[in-house]
Length: 418
Image (cartoon, rainbow, N blue to C red; front, top):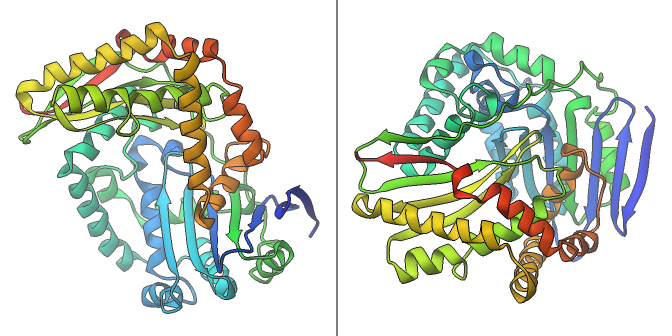
């Protein structure tokens, strides 16, 4: 098997194997741990409506046992060594991750590989895990400040997988069979669809030897990756979903652009000013000055083929309209004025500081490394990223603000009493 390794930066390496798997690592000699993850390029964005939730269900089912390990073996093997094992399904990817002491990296890789490549996917396990997923769906339904985000995505894209629930629905999860799980696993869990990233106290050549021992470089490439259907224009509506809750939970937001779009830095700067933290405009206005909410914040999410940005607020039913008015006023002000001068310089410093502090941990470094191939972007050092943020101009910020923060562009979803 041919392996092509390139040095990305001091202690950072990327290897592309002939069968398509991509491996990245970053050495952090000052720590005693390693974070290691396997990402599969399939998730809810690749699902048909009738199979909604199948990616998430498969993510759960791999933990029920493999050809060599029981569910209990999987749970104990890293935890008894002080490590941890986790997984998540997003819109675009499914990820399986471990964090262990550096000396236990071989065991972590063996467990992760076994989960990803050799799940048993037994019928009686599915019957049990289906109940767990249905309980998870119930938990979201009982958590209105989570549910409102699912409702907002479904309102933006009612007929596209980006608007589907990652968990699926009671009906779709109830109909999924082991044959659906096996079909997805056979179709998507192949080296061509896989990115492996690690960060911590490790050596890249040792990592490659461990992966070879796990069989990653003799594993067949597999079929072409699954494709996401074209994303239609988002709906521009206001929607109320009746629910007997103590508050009105409201998301005001719109669709934006994919992760690869260079305008994302301008949007991150705008969102930081608008609603990220205690110093943000929304916190100071909606909470501190008007006393209309305990929780109010802005957000942005970037996917492979689109993105979203917006504001969440949880407020008393009697003051909900006033809160929405205040939020729209602040968004409209940013849309009209943008940012420049001292305000722009200060938020750049804030975002750069947040990025730098986040990357103190091996897990954060691991996620950052995986993001480059997953988002089909060239590698950039942290310093290059910080320079790109510094280079964002007031004109760029103003253009993004005018397009995506204008109140008339927003889709608003209200969850709560009439």
